[in-house]
Image (cartoon, rainbow, N blue to C red; front, side, top):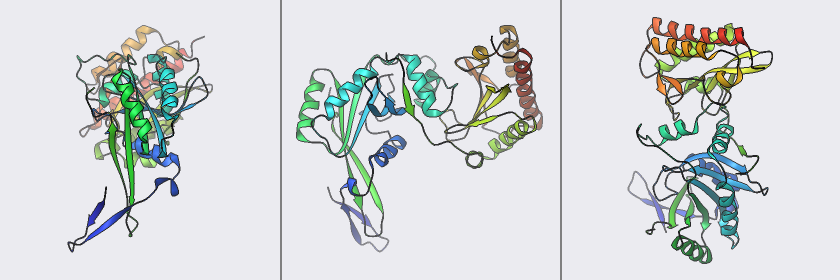
Length: 350
């Protein structure tokens, strides 16, 4: 394939196809696909939940994803040609992925997002914009995606054979181009796949951590007005703030053990610009503290009474998509302080 750029004077300049591996590590390809996963499977959209996930055989899954229907997707990247053993390696990784249960997949996502309270089911539902009546059964099926600059004939033929036997394999070929001015382009094409057709310990790499300044810059005016007050409250009361890949958690310090009260997300996050409670699930107030169930129920009712929160699975969310009044911001801060006080009063579970 030849690729040309069109200048303002109407002249054309050709982008030269260049071997990707000459100037790029394989991690660059991972970064690209991690940020742009849509289009590497037939349906178009894919949720990345882990990177460099360690298997029970000591291998590393380059990228681990989940499709709209809950199938787990193993993505194997090769920056050059695909050797003969690529599919065998992908099959080994798929056999590992097939043994993961929902709790382990959620654990991988939490490591990847650096967020101990994120719910896989809720994150998946929001990411794919599923309706409230659309239920998802995770990991009932597994898929493999082979990505390389050149998908060899042997790999294409074997992948097509596996697909004919009901094993879902997709092969994606990418091309790298560079112009004289330094502009670089990457293109991708599905070359196999457009035709009809539980381990003990899991670890994963993670995305870079956001900073406070980066987080504030990612908000709109409505969000900055609310989150600046929340972060000021945290500093005034010595409440630890843990920065994740998109947002942060606000915590209470109980003799070195931090208990999250809320998570804050920016405009571009899957959860959009919002505040999420952390009253249920792993690492939550319910699982880590001795706060009575009745007190937690009352705190939930108080949150909903502010008129700012709505149900979001087992949690509540406060969507910041408009200007909050001073009374509304004060009500939100008062609720955060009430939760913090309850955690301090009752302490950790014995």
